[in-house]
Image (cartoon, rainbow over all chains, first blue to last red; front, top):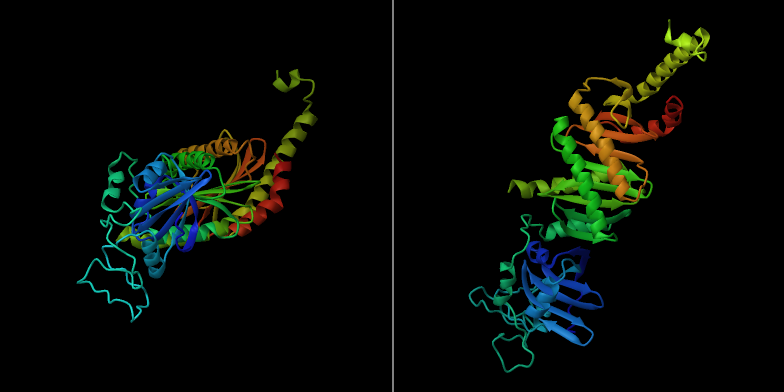
Length: 278
Length: 142
């Protein structure tokens, strides 16, 4: 297995493979995938998957076969790891991928080749082995780029929400707060994504029941849209709140009180406003 | 002639005692509920049955219309159904927030609940503190 740079982990989550490309429009990094005893990754640049890879025992899958394998699972568990431009350039190099857009490291090495916009098929500053994908003379070429978009033509559940990288950062930040057990984004039909230690199906079932109650009550009260609902049981809190066109669901320990929950949600919903207005 | 006379258990003295304690209980319950109503931006306090029947209520600046009571009933039933999916976990509290108001529902005993209606600017910490402090007294009057 090709070892890619570590990157900065935004947290583990569970979602369908199709969720990844539609929710990473500003994400540059690697998505590390774990399915049973196997592991792999998807190298992504702003929603565009550049390389799919999976290894289970001696079986190695690359490109479409890896993608098909990921798609054969309704939900996969993965960790989004954000790359710096340097890490991304290195990852491209390791995967033998020719990038068609300039990859400019934060600090340009003056000794390296000059990257200009007039010279698009650029190379990372220190990537002498980077070569065109068409070069068939090199063993084990990485089959990638244009054809990978075919997976988007497959019948998938429509996903209206574009939850891009800053959202993922916010969600992973919430997940990392003390007392947050799990966080999920869901809608009436399904779980969009999940981070944390909880059974996705069970969490979704409870969240949907709460949403059903909220939807029943809201028109009767005539107090405007519901902002959030918390159900407290001895084991902890279950919270639902509108989030973009979906809903967010939090599972917390009892160490988190209503005031704390309201602050988290207010912060999250305030960050959401500029995106809704644009 | 009187229904009470047919029942040997209801002497006039006994009936007077029941009526007197009942009235006293109602007054005491109202007095406790008032401790919540005087909190900043609390608009209503209700002791309610799961079926929507009001045991006692006080309010300030809001109306308990039919639609409101239906909503409260739905909240109790819906919350119980959700808690059942947790594996019959008892509900400790249900909080539902809207742009200006929130509802806070706490089970008292069996099918009895305490419902607080407040503006979002109310202090939840104070409300929950009063709940802890007065819960036993309210339960004893039900």
